[in-house]
Image (cartoon, rainbow, N blue to C red; front, top):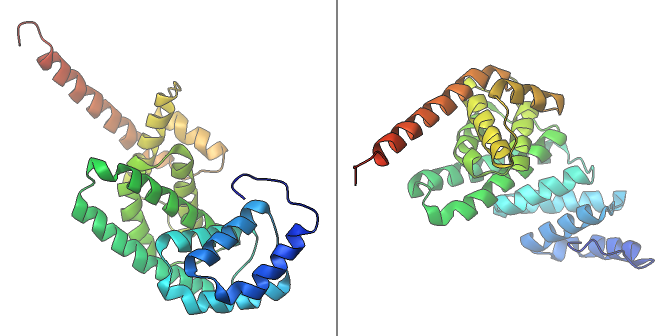
Length: 250
């Protein structure tokens, strides 16, 4: 699946039959990897596969890690496998427990440099989870949304541009109220930084408009605050340089 290698004739059918027969024998990680591979290869399981899969996910829900849960949800969304409402609710609730644990650990470690790669991977995990839950039409409660708001604010600086947009779009799909102005401003600021690093300079208001045109709406109200953040940072940097490098200071 990683190499996107063409499958030999008849292999896909044999693979799907084997997966269906072995679904109860996989470990949590094994089931996650199998579902990821099916999604990457675009192999749609038959109707007979769904019920055993739902039963396994019900049984395993409490033991899934955040990475496994995110990958499984991503695979289900990509394969258009809609879980029963009670299972989707159960998986969403379990994700709240896992997200709360991660949030607490991030506060405890205070984001040391050694954790930057780990936090970038966590940002991708969150992006995949939000995107999948949005596509699966989940209805998380207020506690879940508040937790994701707070956690995503910590992770936005570690997210790549695709992850930033997935997080913003996923939150839009899942929320019943607009994103806070502070969240909008933080997201716009980070997107603008990524664009600037690629040689594209846009002010935050223009950036919000561009994002709206590609489906990431609801960020325009934070444009003024994001622009102010940029001005404050640049003024602070200019002030530091004026002092640090003035003639005769060394």
